[in-house]
Amino acid sequence: MNIHVAEATVDPHGRLVLDHLPFQPGEKVDVVVRSHNFADHALADLRGSVLSFENPLAPVAEGDWETTR
Image (cartoon, rainbow, N blue to C red; front, side, top):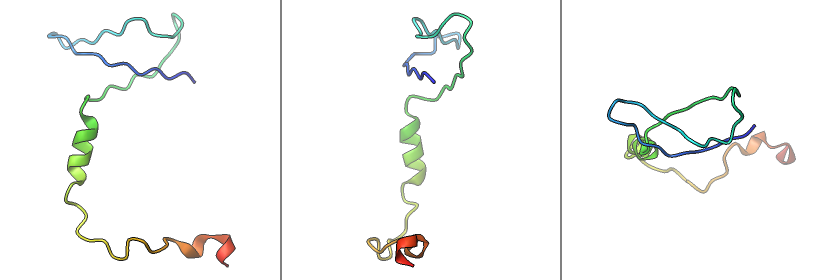
C-alpha cells in the first residue's frame, strides 16, 4: 500500500485539484479529505472532559497479563 499525504486549498468553486500524485494512471485510490485544523477540533472536544485522575500511576488491567497469574 502506498500512502501519499498532500496539502491543498479548496478553490472558490469548491473544487480541489491534486497534481503530480505518485500513482499510475487508472490506479484506484481511496480519498479522505479532512479540515487542516481537524486535530485542533478533536482536542477541543476533549478539553475539560477529564474531571479528575484517581491514582494515575497505578497499573491498568494487571490481571490480564499471563505473567502475573
